[in-house]
Length: 79
Image (cartoon, rainbow, N blue to C red; front, side, top):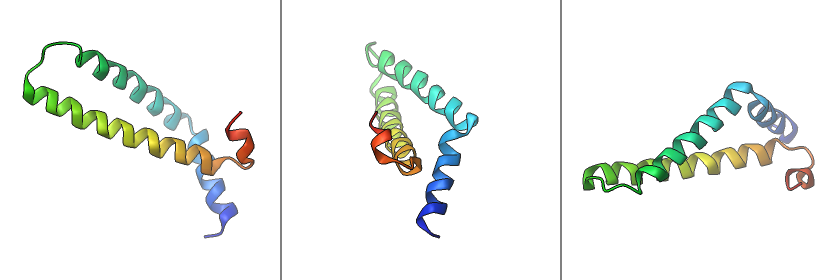
C-alpha cells in the first residue's frame, strides 16, 4: 500500500462522524473515570478504573496517530 493511499485511509477515518462521536464519548467517559478516582472506592473497583485509564490512554495515542498520519501537510496538524 503506497503512502498516499494510507494517508487517504487515515484521513477518511479521522473525518468520519462516527469516529468523531466515539472520541467525544471516550472524552466524557475519561472525565467520569477521573471523577470516580476522587471517591473512596473498593480496591477491586480501583483496579478496574486503573485498567480503563490505561485503555483510554492507548485509545488517545491511537487517535492522535490517526489524525497525524491522515494530515496531508504535517505543519497544519500542529496549528
